[in-house]
Image (cartoon, rainbow, N blue to C red; front, side, top):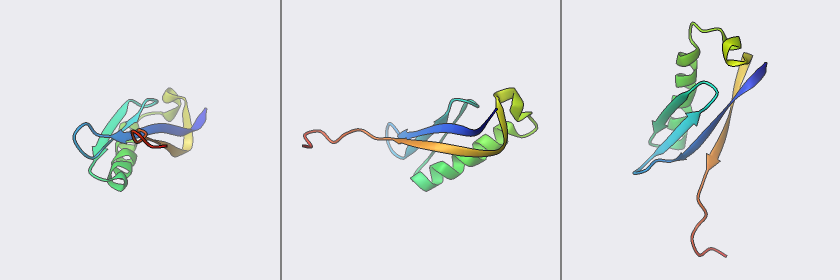
Length: 77
């Protein structure tokens, strides 16, 4: 059993950010990084509400590990 849930945050297609957590099939978004992380926390909690975390290979207490995906700047040396 693991105590961590992994998520990736990337820039949205038009604006803001998109967060995706594969372990529990959660996707959310926000206008800022802070808003996106908070939305992710809430979405994961709601997704697991009333569920047995063991069904997802998880055990409390849970932590979320977030990776920020960024693109390199073109032409940067």
